Image (cartoon, rainbow, N blue to C red):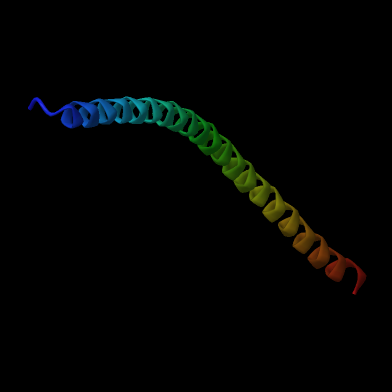
Length: 78
């Protein structure tokens, strides 16, 4: 264990481990930001889905009114 190369290698490995730990911490923070952004995106998608469903109901109502108008016109004018 008195070989200076082993101590040098262990010192380098410790430095690399510290760098990796710093990178992992940075990646963890980035992942947290991505998760928060994903939550916001999911909420907006839910709102958009609900809006589309409401719009589809309104379109269905307009189509039904159009069909009734066509039948009424056919009954009155023909």
